[in-house]
Structure formats: C-alpha cells, structure tokens
Image (cartoon, rainbow, N blue to C red; front, side, top):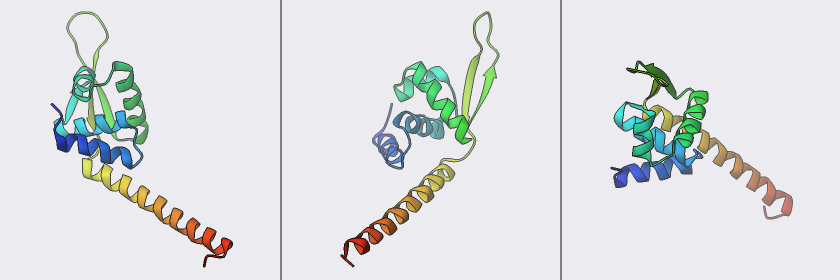
Length: 119
C-alpha cells in the first residue's frame, strides 16, 4: 500500500526529528484524512500500542484530534483520528525548527573555531 513517495515522506519527516512511528501516522493521515486505529495499524505497519503512543504524542503537539465512533453491541468504542492541520503546515513547522537548530550549530562551531584559534 505504501508508495515510494510515502516511504520517502516518512524518511524525510524522521530526519526532521520526528519519531518514525509518528512520521508514518502523519503521512498516512495526511493521505486519507481520517482513520480508525485499526486502519492506521495496518497501513503504517504498526502494533496497537505503537499507534496509541504516536497518537498521545500527536495530541500533545496539537496535530491530531480524536473522536469516538458509536459502535453496535458491546466493547470499547472505536476512536477515529484526523490531523488538525494540513501536512504543509506541519512540515513548515518542522523545517523552521530544524533550520533554527542548524543556525545554532553553525554559530557554536564558529565560536569553537575562534576559541581554538582557527579563525
């Protein structure tokens, strides 16, 4: 089900600092819009606890919302998940954060070179 573009998206999101499981969930939800936990597990090739942990973190970031779906019969209600922001907004946030980190690293390296007498 995953295309090369999907896999590359997950790789790139991971390189920005996102946990791989979270990157998989973000990429999948961006593609399908809304999904129940079981569909996310299958599509992202994750176990239920991994999806739960990813959702917990995504909710803390404010990137996902959850709603309960009414289910016939007994048992726990199904939860459906949807991104609260568009993928491009999430990516823009990650890129900005990573660029700030790069600037800080460059500044620190320049300072180190200066202290060591390389500049």
